[in-house]
Length: 161
Image (tube, rainbow, N blue to C red):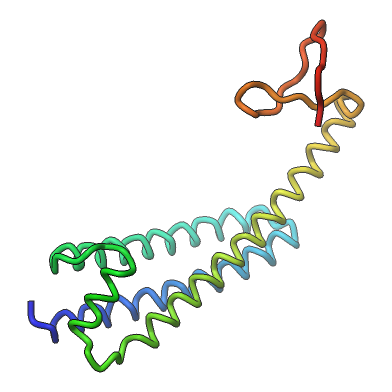
């Protein structure tokens, strides 16, 4: 493959990735607003949009890996850097690659923030359910697999969390 053709293809992939990450960042911000507003229907719709966006990012990643394999370089970050050095000696795409990495890190932060909020809400609901079902004063025990389980009526509790 000609370096110019490879460069054009990588430029297209980086532009698509940046656009998809920008869309994902917006969706994650919106998801946070919906979580705060307890908008379950909105969260369902937002979840579908987020999944479509993630699918697009996976498609782009697959295409980039395919290009790396075709050019006989590793499909990891070092392989991509090697490919960029070959097809873009002027280093004109480096800024876009850094932008994509920064945007991906921001998306990861937003996703973790949303996940922490969901986890906190689940714990709160679990606590309320324990009160309603009368299990609030029962010890919390874990089975061999590390999963929470109800103690058996005649079982002796050795430890609780």
